[in-house]
Length: 308
Image (cartoon, rainbow, N blue to C red; front, top):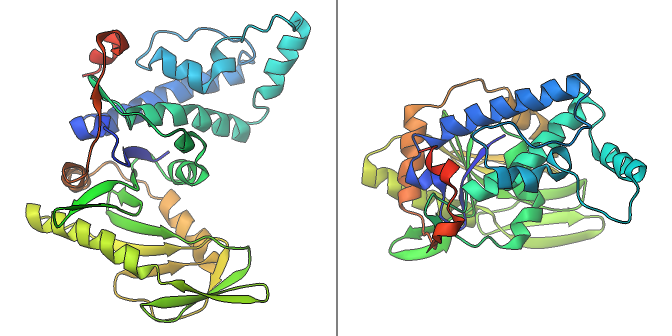
């Protein structure tokens, strides 16, 4: 599961220490997956319980896996009805267990992407139901970092950048193109493209404009820090067929016909975190806008301070 290191202009754990939190996240995720998998294999997942002492924050667990860790109080239900409802929500196969686990991690990731030990940002509720955000996080390995529509500073002006996916070997700036299944995209020029959906043919603004703006931000950061980390632009249209055309330099068009191969290429990557990757992510984070507030003392979790 990719790591959400920046969301809009929210404060982030990763901003405070990009060299600590990625490895810590991978370790905690592995520990808790092994515990959940063991309970599932022992047939004990049906028994809601408080978690054993660990580095996970208790409140995050309650939000993500409420029925796994504790029964909800429902006075109108009998014990049998309540047990049946809990069991109906539990995974029945290993694949369902993996999805159950990843869905439980999502609130935890949102918290790390909107709080530090002493600061917090108020997250728009829409992100909790953002399927595209979940897509980027749940389809890629732990060693990928995601900056999701960060507010960045370019030429002394703020702008909302496109999603930036940072792997151990390079960066991909992604323009996600939606449309009806089996629609056709025709890259026409740098200014406009055509989209055919059923009998309707329409002209749309070329996604290359937005890709180039975000690329300009990334390249300006590279220049400021004398970095040389590969950057590629991607038009991602998993439901649409993209007509064959000449792709601009360092740009890929990933339509329905190439999507599975592209995704498989990402998912099969077996690589540890790289120093150049962490350095690149740190530089980008330094040039993102952050809006946050000091957390009141009663909102600070002593267990979190032990993680520093």
